[in-house]
Length: 357
Image (cartoon, rainbow, N blue to C red; front, side, top):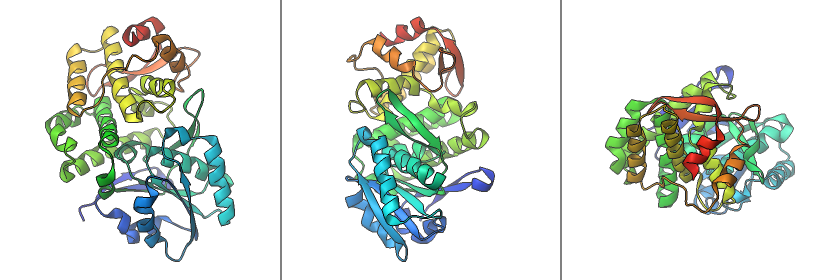
């Protein structure tokens, strides 16, 4: 197997991200991340029928059970965290137990949050089954759930013991979900790696066609970039906030649509373009870089503008709840062009409305 390994260097809590085909069946590798004898597998009703049996073959000799969520962002709730905790109780999980998240970002975020809560923190392993989860949510230890007021407003930083990104599972991923993951790859390049952005422009067709070599390369490059940022700023006190390029706009669009109108990656794609246009409006960045971003996203068949269903005033109201804001003022991730993102505080609401209308 052609396996790429990215190490997330956090001193005594460092962990590997394994990327490549056939990793789910390579239990001799990922079993090393399980220290105790109790395992709870958290998955959903779409993924479990496809991959739970394969995972179970690697759990021989352990006491394990599973808890399945319904599929979709609307199920990333406190109520389901409670049910996962009840499942851990029924399993008799001790402090050396492990939660395995088998699914996309919703499963990973919720399972990780439950692991952070059980006995004040037990091990968990991420086995992401969507491209978006492989390149973003499974790496870095952000866990949490949504509230009616906004996305990911409750959560904890809780790092996994390992991330197992088996690219074979992407064969069953619907095309729309796959494209949403490509948006997160573009985001990493747009934030801080202009050479990677140019590489994506050169390989856009291969990535859209799910060619194995370029896909593994893109996943590894995005994870490597994020791992470096997380190692330098684990709890988002500074640099790590840059990883939220497009998210303030995108989360507002997701929340306005009750987490059912657009996928997270689609929201990020639209949000990045809005952030680029706002940067342009503020005289920070050239229009040519905005156009390069729009062109790349469109080549990957991703949306680049809001649907118009939601009033700009409503989106602005939701943006005010973003976790990056300070002292009642908007604090956004903008850029000075491709690969040069920065945190900008005190952004005038009239300028934000100007790009939302």
